[in-house]
Image 1 (cartoon, rainbow, N blue to C red):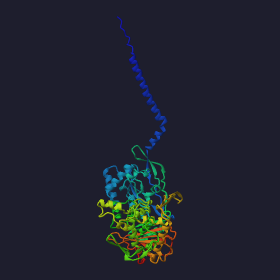
Image 2 (image 1 turned 90 degrees about the vertical axis):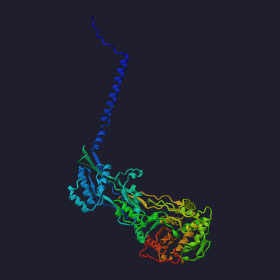
Image 3 (image 1 turned 120 degrees about the vertical axis):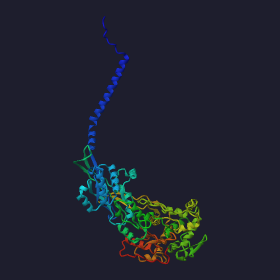
Image 4 (image 1 turned 45 degrees about the vertical axis):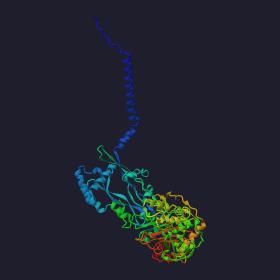
Length: 623
């Protein structure tokens, strides 16, 4: 018997399966081989570079901000070197107990809370693990010397020089320049700060905020190498130097700004000096002011409460652009334009002013009950006849939709933001029938609109809310031929040698149609108010060498408060180049306080030497 050792043949189905499996294996091996070849041959150099970069860390070197100078190149804001206490994470004690003792020693030395130091350092190191964390900026030299002499007691604590903002003129212009502070998490999401990193300092208010993109500069970096454990190695790597920010030139005139600041003194108020054609602001100030040098490092909650305290006069409030004031008789320029352009009256029409009229069961009278007799518009502006304008307010209320005064106020820039290159400007309010009736329906006032509201508006009283900058824009529009300018402070961006890099072109002006005849009538009336025999400010300017046109204003603001004083001047007459607007809270009659302040500012603006008049009594018509 023979054994059959022949093995069974492979079936076709099995052969097919083996072929498929073999093919798949070849494909997989091919993919793996190709990937390895791609990584090692084609991308090898890139991954080597990335591996090296994993061993290199960058420590940010903050760039100094650009300086801010006035129109003549005089420094308004610059930088100074300060000393900061910082913590280097690599040299901190590893044991929690030792770290706590270190933080306690620092807290006692720096007059800070231990938990404040701990949380601040933790947050900074979480964002930038290899950079030093700042504990406190701008510390004194003796403290720095103490830390350096006792380095064993302060492991990981270092000191270094930092750039801090400096304001050489203290309170002068503080509301304009603004503040610089660390970027917030919310701001980091803003597209304006795409190049900003956590821990960077940016402009938080004022000019520092508006032109931050020019002033900020570009940070540098110090590169360090670390080993696999994250510890620093002694190898020195190239340093990337920071690029300082650009210099910003403003239209501000430092001499005029200082004079305006001095003219207000410690009184609450504001002033504006502006070119009537270009809108360039030569001075803009608010009082009381504050010294920004005290808040260079940061503004604490307690600081903010003090700066916004009504009892202390709200020093942080920029009254020139955020004031909510009735304009008093300075508003008569707006009423004059509305009445003439609206056809309520002709330039030569005479209105009899007996000193008082009765409307709605109430007596409406002139300041100090003065009776002016027959007056046309020029004379009404000269003597500041309230009765004349009460009649216009009455007529305007009965004409069409009763919004003639409101429309022209808006056209001339009252009750709307001017567009100045400062943040936080407030638009104010021009009261209208719709506005008051809505408040009445919402039970926020005790009555709907009446003719008396329009009569009050015609003389700048009642619910009108405006500020010196808006009034300056309105006066400029009458003086320059009907152009409503947008006030500007920024002139151009410059390099470190004061060479122009970029001109900051003024924004487009808006045109309102006011006939030349009507404008001239109003300007003549303002000129007579400053120089005529019965002018409300003639006594203030009778010996002033520059001819001006101007208007006083005295506005009531609550029964418990003294009147608010105003003065707005156009100079030189008859072709005005500048408008000066001054207001003083509880200043009384405009001719007695605001007009003398305006005279001091005008003297500085035109270089009038020896003009030191501070208090001048006005004539009998002083509203």
